Length: 287
Image (tube, rainbow, N blue to C red; front, top):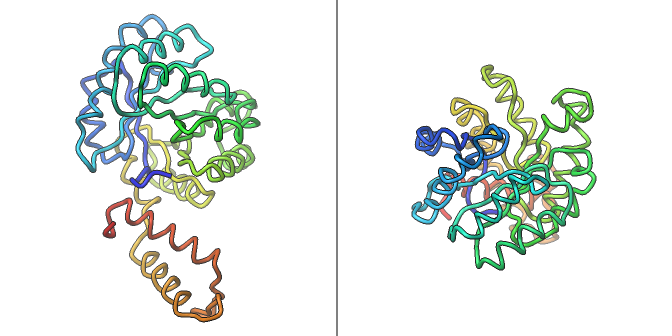
């Protein structure tokens, strides 16, 4: 998993380059310029240069800034194949490319092969948002070392299932993706809260995703970023407890410890080490 924080991802349409700077200044850990759903079919070719310029600028970003992602069109479409071919020719040195509607490991391997032939170091992100994609989650997660991030696309899946983006109908898909991504050591971003003008709903949705094992959540509006970041950032009490757990375990002689009446074993310690790792990624602790 990434050593930097990946708590929040904010989308911006490739047709609106004037808002890229605002998105980058929003506090989001990842900013994704979109060539897919946010761009009408007849505007995709015209929007491509702005998206490429956004991604190309990643090479000049200093430490601490948001990671840059470009979501291209799906590789089962002409637009997506053109995007990938153009990327291979563009010589972009840094950043990440998100493939939407991924349903098989072969799609990622194709992108990897094209980028490898071009000598590109671009990382890949997989957006899984269909029944076939969910069922292939483990194969997708292990498709290629170039895959560095996965994301759950709940809106498309809900439409396919004829249901809502709600906790109960999305439970199986979320659990399957968490197990696949975590098993492969890949960060996993949850679908954005659709009720984005309701701060309580956004915060609740983000906390639920964190508790399920997601490492971050997408946001539809810059105003949601701080709420999402807060949900995925350990607070002072969590950090203090993590330190006490680790210190208690390390001071024990028998491989177990008891702290405040709670049994402390290796899995508990591992979980608390992850808490401190998240705190470091968020800049709350020294590296």
